[in-house]
Amino acid sequence: MTTHVLGDTQVLTGRSLRHILRSPDTIITTAVMPIAMLLMFVYVFGGAIDTGPGSGPYVNYLLPGILLITIASGISYTAFRLFQDMQGGIVERFRSMPIARSSVLWAHVLTSLVANLLSLVIVLGVAVLMGFRAEVGVLPWLAVAGILILFTLALTWIAVIPGLTAKSVDGASAFSYPLIFLPFLSSAFVPTATMPGPLRWFAEHQPVTSIVNTIRSLLAGQPVGTDIWIALAWCVGILIVAYLVAAAIYRRKAS
Amino acid sequence: MSAVATAEPAIRVNGLEKSYKELRVLRGVDFEVAPGSIFALLGSNGAGKTTVVRILATLLRGDAGSCSVSGFDVVAQPDEVRESISLTGQFAAVDEILTGRENLVLIARLRHQADPEVIADDLLTRFSLTEAGTRRVATYSGGMRRRLDIAMSLIGDPGVVFLDEPTTGLDPQARLEVWQTVKTLAGQGVTVLLTTQYLDEAEQLADRIAILHQGRIIANGTLAELKALIPPATVEYVEKQPSLEEVFLAIIGDTPAAEASAASTDKEPS
Image 1 (tube, rainbow over the protein chains, first blue to last red):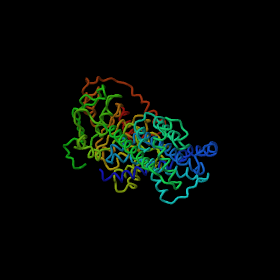
Image 2: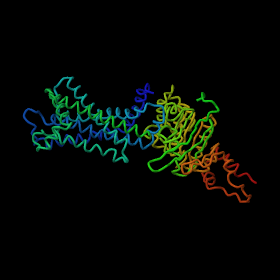
Image 3: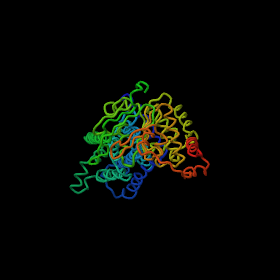
Image 4: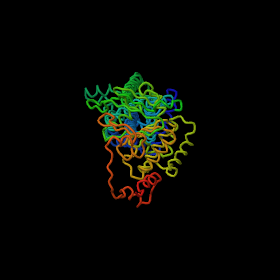
């Protein structure tokens, strides 16, 4: 059985990638809202936001948070697709077949990764048109890509949970709203220093702030300090917990 | 599964019990299915037919009792059981976004077959879906979906096929198409366990019929044996009226082979 895990995962990933290929609107709608926010914050609010001396154009400041929002909205499609599979009985069919059981979930996770990376590229393209520039080498870019991939995987495994347990389509995708909202209570849009006490404490200790600060520093060519370790710890921690919970729910559904 | 001795039943269910919280769905179910036969599990909605099938297909665990399929225990050897079965659930489990052909290729790949493309084309021909093969399944009629569903179940030549209410929700023509398919399967030596709530379906297809009622098998035998359970019929002369189904099929000018042979015996002048 385990010898088939990779092959089966590959076949099933091909299947869900084909779903995306046939409805490319999911990639575009994922990118539309973050792009709208990007436009609004840069051109409407941006002029009035003071991000401190030497922080460059506001679009540079804003982009890391927008990228995280893109991922948070993109993963709701994973929950949606998994929910559809559960409802349609095709997961049941796969489970009555001699295929590696974990392949079904991994296929959705890998598909989510591909779809989100495509949406991120679109958002990044718009940001460049709006004047975003990062004069740094390949290595910081690779580090940014690595963090975004890790963040996508962590959030996708969270999305698997409602995908498996939701009773309705709305329930399957509603969970992503708080995730989309989380960057607003962080350093993504404005520096946390302006926030009142308890909110500031929350903003400085929730995962988005450390991830946003890390990406921002990397793209500005500045030292990342301890932020990168906190960011990685959050991503890996969320990833492991969400994976274990999702896998347990999936296994329990079999008995 | 030629390794299985002919004396061994293809499916064996012993004292199977299953409860959902307070609700005792199965209260000790026993039956055996001979290899290469069609066995119908007959019962009203909620009788527990689907529960039996899901347990046999390793999707659910019973609370008590034992079940084996092709000689393999469903709890101890689920992988071996999955190798030897295929399940067609109550609702056609097909991928709507893919084409019919892509669905078949997908399953063939997952069953680790040598030549998925050839298998897909062959099955499309056998199930009269060649023309529809390149269309997305979302555009298929209920009958076509069901045919595709069954075609997907046959990939990898499983020895035992579970069909859970295969004709529920189908129009009369599609129903006849499915019946024809099931008969062909049994002709090839496949063991078929079929659940249904339609008495005529069990009568048409099954070699043996078991009636599941309130969590137990209350009758199990051939059609003739079951008929013998009730007092001998008194002979009455009744004018033979065509059934609405016969009228419907005659008017739309569509009489598949299955119906033609069945109908001709019915209409025999007496």
